[in-house]
Image (cartoon, rainbow, N blue to C red; front, side, top):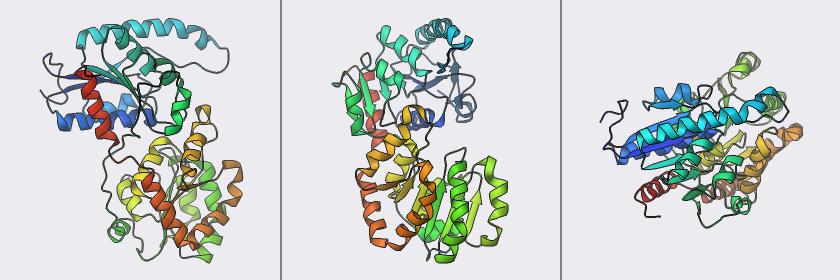
Length: 375
C-alpha cells in the first residue's frame, strides 16, 4: 500500500483527529510517522478542518486528510455561537460516515475542537479511542471526552487533578519531532556562523514569533552585547523580521537572525540557554535537549495554560519564569544566568530530568494495545 494512496480495507487503519494549531497537530504527526516506521503497511488518515494548519501541512507530509464541519465557541454571544450546535450535528454525521467507511482499528485525538466529534463518534461506535493531552491544564475537549476513551496520555503530573476519571490516565510526556540528542556545539554553531567558544542564546517565540519578547530583547541588546560576549540565534517571526534585521546590523557577526528556524536540532545543540514562550511542545523539546531557559508564558493562551506549563517546570528548578508584564527585568535575568555557569549546568540537568525521551514510542505502543483491544 502506498503512503499517499487510496484506502486499503485489509490494512491496519488509524485515524488522527486534532489540529487548528501546531500545538495540537505536531504531536499527531510525530505519532503517525512513528506508526509508519514500525508498521509501513498501516493506513493513516487525518481528520481536520479547512481552516486549520492541517489543511496545508498534512497533504505536504503525504497523509490523506478528511475535513469535517466543526467550529469552536467564541466567548461572546454571536450569531456564530448560535449556529455551533447545528454545525456540530453536521460534523458528527460526517464523522459517523467517515468512521463507518474506514473502520479504523483506533482513533487518536490530540485536542482542539475538531477532535471532539471524531473521538466521541468513535467511542459511540465502540472503536478504541485514545487522547494525547499536551498541556499541564487539559483542554476542555480532553476533559469532556476523558470519561469515554480507553486511555488519556498526559504530559504533566499536575494534569491529574483536573480529571474526574483517573484510572485511564498515563503520564508519558509529549511526542515531538525526532532529533539527535548528542551535543556537538562546534558543528552546530558553524551552521549559524557563530563562535563555539562564546555563549549562545536561542530566542524563539514559536512559528509566528513573539513581538513582546523581540521588543524586550531589542531594548536590552546594547547593554547585553557591551557587557558580555553573548551571541544570539534569533527567530523573530515574519512580522518583526525586517525591523529587527535593520536594528541589529551592527552586531551581524554575533547574531544569526531569521523569521523562522528550519533546523531546530542544530539550534538546540548550539544553545547554552534559551528565551522562549512556554508552549507544551517547545518545553518538551527544550527538556529533551537540556537547554536552561527563561520562559515567558503567552498571557492570552486559553485558560492561561502556558503559565501552568512553565510553573510545572520551574517547580523542578529547570527554568526561570518571567511574566510578559515584567519583561523590563529581562536584561538582569539574562546577565545573571550568563555569569553563573554552575546554575546553567544545574538547570540543564533539571531540564533533562524533566524530559520524556520515549514519549512517542510509549504512546504508539499504547495505540497498538488499544487497537488489539488489550486494554
